Image 1 (cartoon, rainbow, N blue to C red):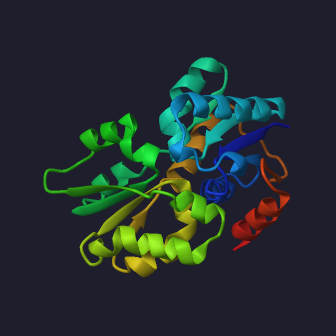
Image 2: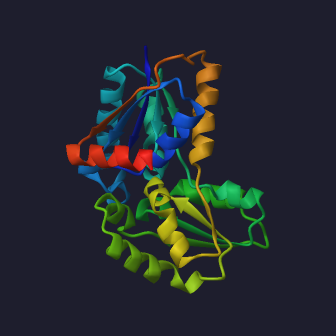
Image 3: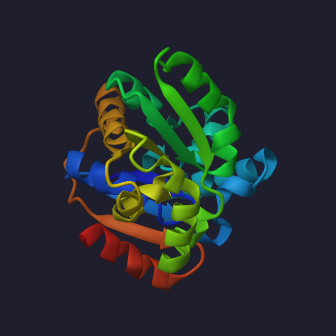
Length: 246
């Protein structure tokens, strides 16, 4: 029995994993949390490719039939190179839900993502393809937010959110969560922007994984098991299960 391999720069990918477990309840999952190297958003491309290649090797060595990059930064930076390096492996990535804002005709959209993703060519391409003439787009770096979420620093998270977003209260009708970590603090973001719809790509990723498994005849009727590995601390694994069960 093979597994679905999932990885992220820490706990953020839990938001994607949660949706995949709903869409594919009979599949087995192996989730690799790379908290040791968090945050990815401040690293350069060569370093990130080296880090993610080691994780892919680990997942393939542990019988993963498909690999989900549950991280916007790793997807925008490394997925093309990983597909070239592992041509026989199916990869599904994560990108900011800019198209969702476009499809739903939002008028004033914030894109909040890591420093790397904010400046990435992929985000630039998405904005070129999916921005309406009457749509205001504000691209904001979340700075150290992913790391603060990883460390569960609630007061510092709220301080940073207020500094980044207070000016957009009652102005922005939508906010694209351009980092999977950010999906773990939707309540906190809504506290700062109570009238703003939060958009992420988690369900879209889950549906794409199902589509790829169907297309390659890889769907299985397994036990629905989950194994979580964390590169930094077993305590973070315990916290991950708590997040999934909430």
